[in-house]
Image 1 (cartoon, rainbow, N blue to C red):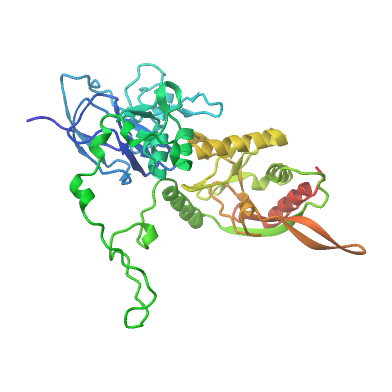
Image 2: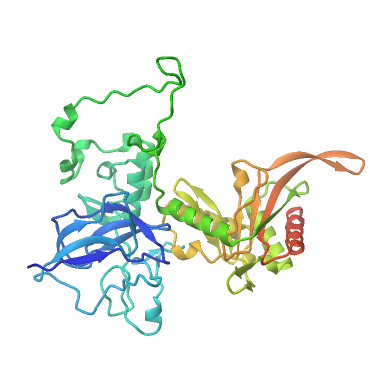
Length: 462
């Protein structure tokens, strides 16, 4: 009787409880070799390529693209082939579900180079050099994320995920990347301008198998019932309950949260259960500003000034140990809104940056978030955060403090207000500011003094 091997979904980084299948690189019945790409998975922070742990025949796969797989659950089942290379007995892949593990692949760093994978705790003690997914290494070298050729098209896992999301056929996208690789820019341009797509006859070999069968093409399209507010009898139509028929969220049916939004829901719920939030609001008067200035850069500078004046809010709070850690440096988490959900990358050492450095750092972080190339380490560890929601709408808010942080600053929509001054009235530009803080870690007086210091810095001419 042939022996089978079950491969369980490893922890793809920082204790994430699950991941979403983006694309399988094989199908059941295929022969795959050790460390060849098996599947790309989307976590809350990245799209990760998972290589095969064995050489052999693929017997079973966990699900289809879009399905959520719990960490530790069956991802694939194989029938190992003894005639092909296998990993030596006792050399595991470092799949440890009981403790946080490291990502399999290096991701793009801030300077567009390779960001080395951080060592797991076992390595720090001189243990094995295994990775969460991938081959056992005898040295400190790690795999680099690389473009994979599937169906004749070479593209990174993140590029394939973007193409799937935008509904772009990668086989028809002109490749401008190195060595014929389809890049993120190629996919975005193709989605914006379908005329750039190659003719369907130019599809690479193997894609033709995906064409629909003639019978399916000739089948008549089902008639679509028009939605009306009243029935034929003139009475209001009853809304169908969820589950009455299949369909996407746009048709009023439930849709399971995935990836970034799934993690965001967990983080918000956790914050709601652990933090005692209190919000103070006021308006920053910008009337004295000279010339055109970068509002976000000024906000970051003002936050730095306030953190220096009142360090109690530039801190982390441990609710279980009832301990506060006040930070000598200021790392500002900048909330970035995307279609996939909310990202909060960290602007490191904001207290050492000038206006140009702050703007360059923000632009870099936003670009990396949009391309999904940002390192997971850049999405945590900030000491205080900023939500500039006013660029869309809204004056005041109660931004959510995410533990272990103590405070978050929210900036509302810029307005021109009538202000009373000595001898009459004037119209001033003012920026609504909301400060939410964890009242367990800071007093109302500390929060008010912090807000005062922030407003004073914002009121300076430049």
